[in-house]
Every structure is written in C-alpha cells, then in structure tokens.
Image (tube, rainbow over all chains, first blue to last red):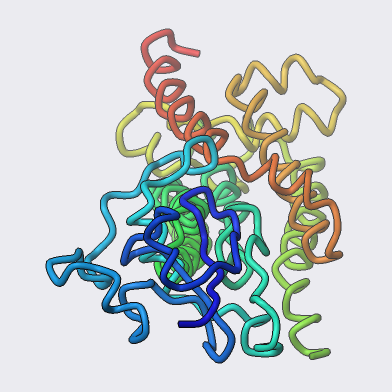
Length: 197
Length: 131
C-alpha cells in the first residue's frame, strides 16, 4: 500500500502516511485523499486500494450534503458536506503536475474550486435604486445566494444564481424602459395633467 | 481574449452614459413641477410612496447644491446611494483585477441583507409617518 496525503476536516493537508495508517489518523470513507498516480483528490472510500480499510456498511461517498451552513466563513461546515462538495472539483494543479500533491486552499474557503463567479450584486442593487423594484429585490436575493453557495462549495449552484441575478437585473432595466415609454405615451395622450410625483 | 475584456466593461460604460444623461436631464428639469419625467407607477396606482420614490427630485436638489433637501426626499438614500457607489467602485476594481480586500468587504452577504430589510422597513415607515 502506497503513501497517501489526506485532508482534515479543517481543510488542512496532511501526510504522506502509509495507506494502512489512514484510519488510525481519523480518515473516514468521505475524507479526501490523494496519492501519486491519482488525477485528483477523491474520497478515501472510492479508492480501490483503500476499500479494505473501511467496513462495508460505510457511508456511501455519494450521499447528498447536509443543508448548507449559511455562514460558512465563520464556522466550518460539517466534514461530510465539505468532502462531498470538494470531491466534485478537479484541482487544476493536480492535473498539471501529478508528481506532487495537488495544491489545496487555493481560494478563501479552502476548497478546490474555480474562482468565485461574479455575483452581479451591483446590477441588482442599481435595479432597486434606479429601476423596476420588485425584480431588483429578487435579483439581490439571487446575487446574495451566489457567495453563500460558493462558500458552501456548491460551484454550479453559485453560477446558476449569478446568472439569475444578471437575468433579473436586465429584466428590471428593460421593464423600467417599458414603463418610461408607456408613461410618455400616456402623457402624449393627455392622461397626466399634474406633476404629482 | 480582447473581446471578453471589452465585454466586461460594457455594463459599466452603459451605466456611465445613463448617469451622464441623468445628470443633464435632472439638472435642467425639476421633477416636482414638470411632467416631462416619468412618475412612479406604484404611487400613481396606490397613492403610497414606494421605497425609491423621491429619487428624481432628490437628484435635482442634489445637482442644485441643496443636499439636505435632497435627503429629505428620501432618507433611505443615506444608505442606498453609498452602497450603490461602493458596489460600482468594487466592479471597476474587479475589472482592473485589484482591490480584492475591498471587493470582499463590499460583497459581504450581511450588507445585502441589511439593504433588503431597510428597504422594506423604510417603505412601510415612510407611508405611516408620511415622509
């Protein structure tokens, strides 16, 4: 059995240690491990060589994560959720240089993920200040979810919400233009006669 | 690569052009007396002021140097205008690929939550207190 690197629940990289010593060091089937020859970090339970270390009734590595902690920056997530999410992402360093352990902690939340998507908050807020308010508020909520989901390790979800924030900000801007045009049509039709707001 | 670089500036350029047009229009037109600026559809339909009502009059007063009067048209602007401005600055910095500390500070989720809560509280309060 070869030597393995593994991640603690605090996202700290440890090792290398002998594969057979992993369990003694607190490695569970969900813990991310890496050894030479592996393309990326993977849950220990999914590594063929390590199968024998864990009892068969072990927690499957593909269980969905528990509900996200809304403030993951302040409090670490539960290890199960962390590991599941991390395992979805390929560390670019791992692919580029498989001879050394892939770099972890490449972003602020310490997970191997692409950079945070733009949350489009600026357009959502401007929407509520300058444009159509109801869709602007919805856009802010979407934009706010982006950072939350990203910090929780859900990159795909974060991208979706970022796109939603952008889409609804654009909808708000277009709606405002429509309202303004509509106002001038009514004005030309003589509907408004006093400047009451 | 060059195209994406241009594309990321496009929204800010549009915003800048809207701002320039807005400054010119609202410096010239007084929304309190003129019909030539759009009125709030929410106010027309319900008679209540929406949380953003007063923006145009406020801008007009601001451009004429009456800062206190500008504020009195909509007190929520104490928070919302600076918030919008730092978001714009953060967006510019992001495109310049610098100021990460500032960007992270501006994009803290708590700020957006406070903004939404104050937005609705202000919307209700101003109609109760008639401000």
